[in-house]
Length: 350
Ligand code: ASP
Figure 1 (cartoon, rainbow, N blue to C red):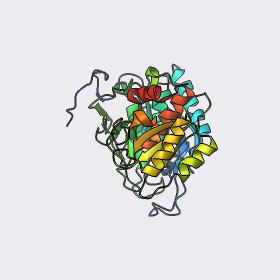
Figure 2 (figure 1 turned 45 degrees about the horizontal axis):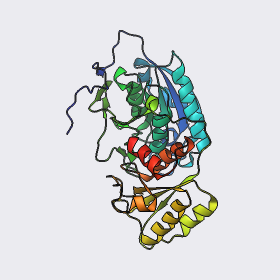
Figure 3 (figure 1 turned 45 degrees about the vertical axis):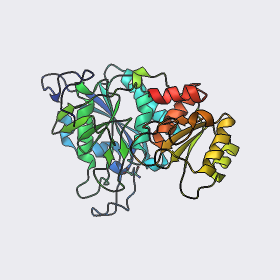
Figure 4 (figure 1 turned 135 degrees about the horizontal axis):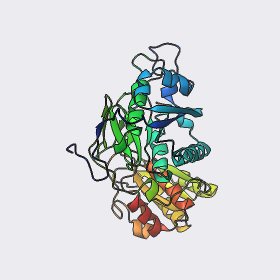
């Protein structure tokens, strides 16, 4: 159990924001999701349309925002994040970088659907070129619902983004009073309001009633500490899963389609059914990057553990889940990192 202390990466002025200095200027970029969802009635929390409520309306139901920040709202997109596209990732990342380069912006909050939030967050964690806070938030219940969770999540996200201790922590996710690192956080429930966790490692800290407290810091490089950029052509990387009775058909089809990389969501500790493993070894022998991760949801994958990575030409994803491993692999390939040894170093680093 962590004890709540100031880490070396976090300035010592944690706690409630000061009221004597001018309020921080926070850009709120809306992209859609359930936080901007609407249903025909307030008791409907499953049959709603995501991404239909505009950013001004989202802000208008949280008057307390005006006590924590000066808000600069922008509607970047209005999508259900299940439909997140790489072109939108490019737009979003470029906009975040442009805003953070401006002296008058102190931080960015992004409202996002929960479905792919962890992927977008990790992408930004690796490609934002600033140490100013970037905080994603979302909701599990639509804006029209009884006990909608979006308004408080939004207030907390803006509070975190405006807090001095959030600087240099990488991209953050504020959800249900907790502050998570983009690298670690995953969605773990289909409907529960407490849907985001950082398995094994736990949240970075918490936010409540205007108070922000960090209990640990991120140790792997991020934001200004990476060489990754948005702008290079997206690389074609797909995810396949291993399971009882799986064939090699999906892998062979991806190879025929010309993918540059395949991430396998392996069973257990990243083990792969013999049929699929042979197909992946064949793919690797053709120069396709093959990354071994686990479908389990927590824990890590040991290099040369459940598969002979050295002999097969595979890379271990470590503690990244398959979807985050895909993000890193796409960025690494775009940056010109190739071959199992160099890619393994990348996965061991980020
Ligand atoms: N399908 C929604 C989305 O990801 C789910 C949510 O936001 O909770 O946009």
